[in-house]
Length: 103
Image (cartoon, rainbow, N blue to C red; front, side, top):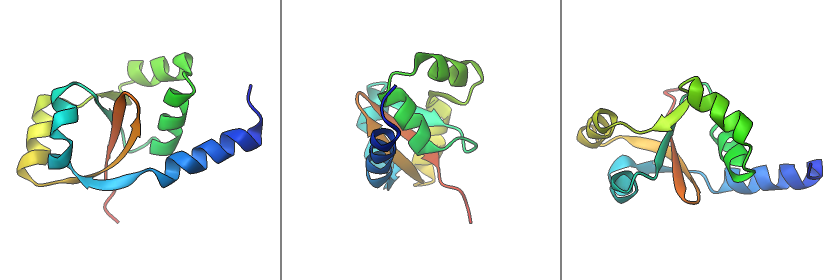
């Protein structure tokens, strides 16, 4: 296990790399199958961190619970038509996407 300070520094780095972005700008990533939808009840940064750390057990659990998964064609079309902005962060080779929470 890595040092907690190193892990927290890496989480901070991931957090700084998140961004609001128009879904339309992510079409090429969607077309290549590289977009992963993260449900609103999960922390986008934590999911990105666990994927980057190759925590297979946690990622498989989220997949089996339907908390992360591929963006569907229907969802992509809805976001495209509505010109939706999403939260996104890159964890190569994926772009993790989360719908913006309305405040």
